[in-house]
Length: 269
Ligand code: MLT
Image: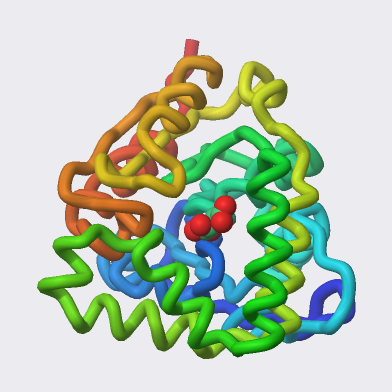
């Protein structure tokens, strides 16, 4: 399905009924990374997965990208779907977008799941790395980005023993347009530090991290859990950065338990 929002066509999938769960994917993937979550959770909840601006079947315009703009796209899609409040799940870049979304539209957030992400901004070296990766994308194309990213996204055991997961991730990465890759790299490099925001997050929050995640390690998850009032932390063993793909059953169970609690009617006095 596609919606026209903020001057672009945004592709999304909308399955099931009940509490809306909105899933925001990692860089440089697309909504297909949530296939196992959609399949398992749409029998209990309304699951919405989105190809963020620059990815998958959504438009990838050739110009300046910001995470605020992507948050605006998500907000416009909620309006399009007549969803007043949702639980939002963001993994890695998806989590960075949730911080931008929360800053602008906190009244639309019923709960947050921050998975394999971090609140800190990029270091100067990190920003330089984004620029270099954009040049690689421009000169060598998305398959060179897949070569660089796959060892950062998946654990060595998955890379060695689960070729179907590796191929799935490669296909998603290779489906990107250069404009979308460069645009996201620009947007992530320019994102602000969200650490000061953490103490102001007032909605129920579940943090999830793969125990083997090196891109956004458990120490980053612990920082968020310490600073967000009442946040819970789950560390998933045998998973690296794409914990939802490497350990889908455990990931789904954590998300389902959190969403079930959120969906319960508030107790009266
Ligand atoms: C992601 O998985 O979204 C990226 O690894 C995030 C990043 O590069 O900071």
